[in-house]
Image (cartoon, rainbow, N blue to C red; front, side, top):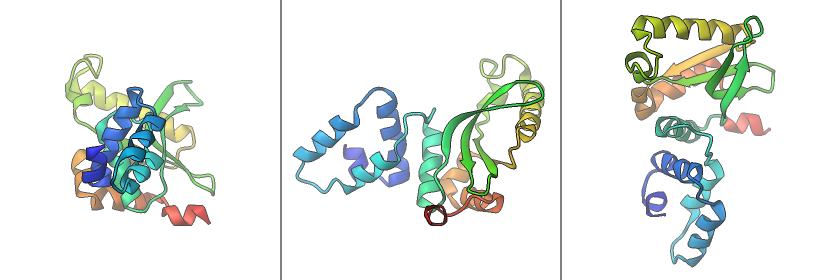
Length: 177
């Protein structure tokens, strides 16, 4: 609760996402708020955007940056099937735009290239090749754009927001109309 009340929204969102992923009930958080003698508006905002489907803190921080940047909030951890190979690819972020376009956002950590446990011991070259195959499969599945961003992009905010806007992710207010 203290983190949600004293930390910037985008840095508090990973904490709330993690709590929900570990089984904390929203009702319990709301009950605590009802006993506090403080304005819980920041907690209510966090709960509105919280999503236990976020797989790690970096993805949650990225989503918090998207919200603070005023962009349409994506779906999380969506599976997309390559129609040619039948391969199933899970994407970090997916925007289904009103005009039918699909935009994928990928939070890129370097560990998937360098950690043998995360790249099936293929090494960097094998991991890069697998990533290229994955992208090709996503495009065959009618994904229009794939936007990649790093932890540094997320921390600096503008690089991430600019990449998403350039790919066509609309402002949240445009989607609500």
